[in-house]
Image (cartoon, rainbow, N blue to C red; front, side):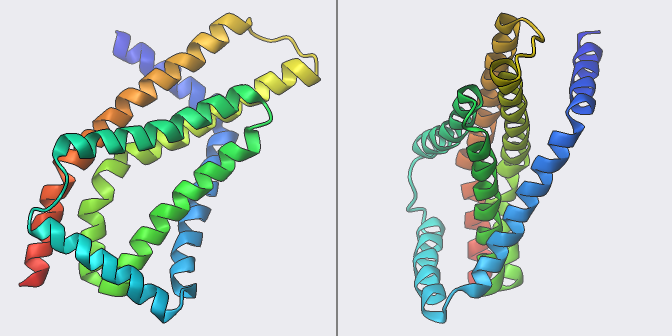
Length: 214
């Protein structure tokens, strides 16, 4: 019963904010494409330098010389939580609306650049490495970033309506409570993604690197 209720609420929210969802998803995809294009614009020396450090990193992974799982988890969780938290704060600040969109674009650009660089330098082996090192955690992280961007943009627009257009909608207290609940829910999902990145991805990467070396 509760599951069906939550599904109905989620479906209703998506329908209500479908235009924002569409805009945010397109913006993120544009960031991914831009990141991939940037790879092709790099000079040969820049690619060689970056690939050298990347090769060292993969060598350390293959030899088991990586940070402990707990340290990796904390680093991943803090990094992504700061990103989500900044979006949340910008949503309250009203003037942070364009910055939310810029942050999402940058996130897409980083993903596109990382995958594009690996594929550009290593071909199918690079694609396989990207698949095991980037995809697992980002199956959770990317949707959460997109949803949090939509929630923050929507909240910011409501604040703008209240402050500058003098429109009175829902009472402010329930609104901020739901906004805070969205942040907590995002943090829970981010912790799950960080767990995957810390405890699953390194093992997958080690296996793939060893296979490539053979």
